[in-house]
Image (cartoon, rainbow, N blue to C red; front, side, top):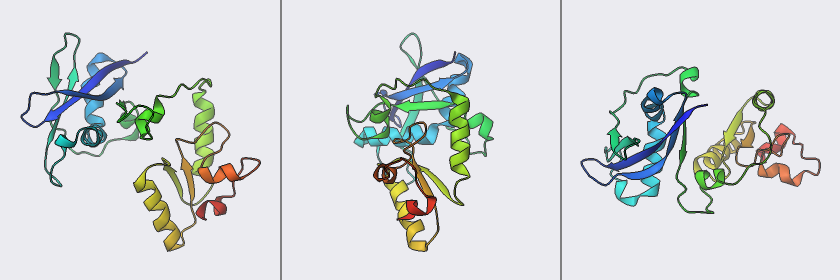
Length: 194
């Protein structure tokens, strides 16, 4: 069993800490490091939630902290931008507060109840199979502009690819909204380009 804590953010120098999500780690002591590993994602999400957190490109506008048991906030230090091994990155997790309930942002979609049992080994095998199913495989989110832009650029460049929309993924498929048109749920990787 892991530990979780609320992640809060405020404008640099401000007093108004606002909840932006939760971070998870193996232990209470690892929670600050987990938040720092996810710092870019958390800051980006804070800026999406709160317009007054936005600033000029490159401007440091947001400070992050963890809400502790007594209701106080432990401010997080500014992280260093190092290369991190994959094992360290996957030891941390963040889930943000939904921008609006029943919205289409990634965190609103994560709030739906998932009743299927989770088999980590089976999911890992399926992801490994997907990752080797085409020379280029994009793991995307169907409502992510950056993802659809990347798909469009690959199409324009004539690069064969397969796109797997993680918000549409269910064990055994479909893997993308394009799959929904296939009667048997299967998809030829070349068909993903069109």
